[in-house]
Length: 305
Image (cartoon, rainbow, N blue to C red; front, side, top):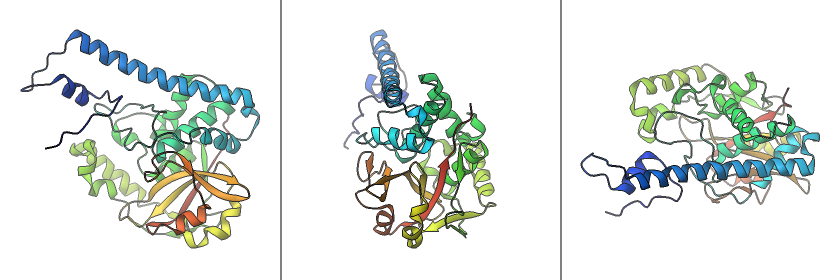
């Protein structure tokens, strides 16, 4: 059987124990190995902190704090172009905790990281600790980390909760959206894909969250209508793409950018392997993909000190 190769920088407990050669469930951790692990974890945090600092330094040079939140979203988001795509960066071993990874991004962590940085810039809070506080506020229901179910897993729930927190405003209906029905149940029906859902008590909380989602009205802009309404999309708008996948509300997320009068999509696609700007317009991007059915739009709000 071919052994899975550990990725560089993987400091999870499982990877660490595998590297030490755990035998018969008994682990003796040599002092030098523990020192190396600690140093690696510290280096990873330092790397993320340096990336964060570089964004704030750019913001200061360009005086981004004087621009709108949407313009800052675009300016900061484009600095991530070329950053490698990495799936499931939040799914680490152990208890639920705030994960910061600016070295590798998936579509949601790209949006969250850009939004957190942009809010800090508009608030003139240029510290790594401030960035982490904003990231937690955006990523977790009611801003609190209270186990795996407290993370905003479904993107329509992410929009709903962040609208309550006055971080974004759902503008889907006002720019041409329509109501539609779909039962959200993807996580509970695919428990095998989520390590945490092996715990029945956690799975039950996820089912309860899905039940609450299914009591809300869903809205979207069908992809056939996007070309006629995309003039209402402004730079920095957060766009979630709805999908034909059973039980799932949104399968991809990104940010609106305007390039030469064309509405494009700044995103971290799995297929492209890195953060990038769509070659064609947003409407054409969706039209070329059968599983994409339309979009939902969340507009970032100016942060209040």
